[in-house]
Length: 287
Length: 347
Image 1 (cartoon, rainbow over the protein chains, first blue to last red):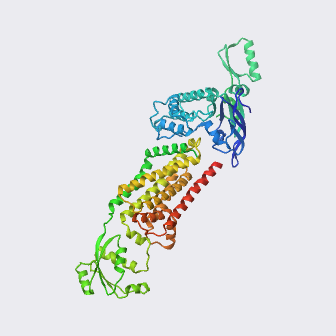
Image 2: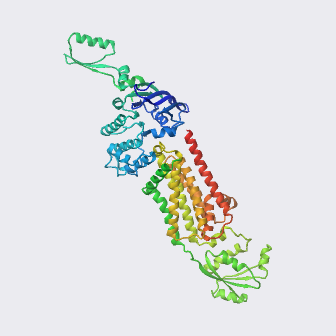
């Protein structure tokens, strides 16, 4: 499966698999991601999303296949890959007894980033005022923003995010999506996993559906919806009755045509399929 | 290995430890025990006792008794002309214990024959009299120079117990505080964030430095508070540094094996027993098999070297063997830590 058109490929995955005994957590997955692209990986729990991220970030060794980031093998050239990437973990794994500023200073030192970067990031994620507070006093949304700030400390060319808005209230989730979008606009590549279809639809240039360790579809959300979604129309007739018709269904389409010919239609609202529909179609059940 | 990254993690751990009540308690408990011992026992709280001797020929027995009872009793020796004079002095409680040493006693002892010895005690013996009488068997048995009996007799109880408290402190830091830091990193997955850029080895080295720093700060603190000064400072430093390095290695291994704080709380207590017990029982008479087991444990050797350093003389022999045993444990500990790191890399 090819990268988003136009960009230079930065992540290249070829036949990547991870087996735990008989369990094929990730099974022969291949795809590529272009520089500046936001790719979403969607799937049920246990579909292999986190394992894929673990392999791409060098924290799990693939059973077979290989993955390159900026041309470097994530297993054999891990030390070259490390400065180019960063990860927002699913768990809020911050040092809770340390302040927000101390957390960022630690990682700035680890990555060799200038100290000024810390203040810049705190400002960027809106935590300047809370920077001197211990992280354990932060709300979940603040911790998530701190995690993102930490992952941006080395200005990574590829930012991985594992369920970045899981458990956040809508306002915090919106803030987080804003930061991700901003980072991608600056030219970085974003690779995220999520359970939220609307989030994937809103954020991602392309999404990949992972089911039982395999990619069952990978394309732009709009293309997927056109290809696999169920287009419907909501019809209001003169007799005030409402009808839902499936435009891809021959019978429904003929019925609509007949209503229109008879002048019985008051309003028609067409609706394209949702990613949720696409996922159900392809993976068999909703997320 | 990147020194900047090691330093960053090490400094973070030090700062974090000052805010972690568990680690502060791990340091304070042994410190308080040391201080308590220091108050309970005095450097020279020995009771005075008088030994009366009637000997027709010169004997080494009174001097041997003085040496054997030195830890508990300040024994004065006084010669008497005959048994009647000595008996009278004992009865009048001017003398705590009387000995009638027959002619040729020392030669008979050397020859292995059980020599006849008359002991005169008052009807209600003093502590000193009882103690000296009890030590007679040990002194008249075949020589046991260099064993714990003579070693511990030569050093005040206060110093012994402060040394035990120091060993407890190092053990608490190494097999509780340090693994607690490591296990917390694993359990909270913060170590995963560190290893996004740092290597496992860099994290481990930083933790080892953190443990050693804790030891390096706390041991002099204990010595300063208890005002115990080793006679042989160089040997004491070697002993404490070697022990700290070794136990920190074993602590890293323990911390690497534990996944949760609950597991650690259970197993660190188990690990403390074989580290602490030898320090206490190395001085006691044990069955042969138990002596061997205790002897090969690192803290038994820490105790032996520590006693020598505090006394300023070789009360326990074969110091090189003590150093070798502690070093062997260090090699085992760090070897296993290294092996686990390699396995992690390959996973």
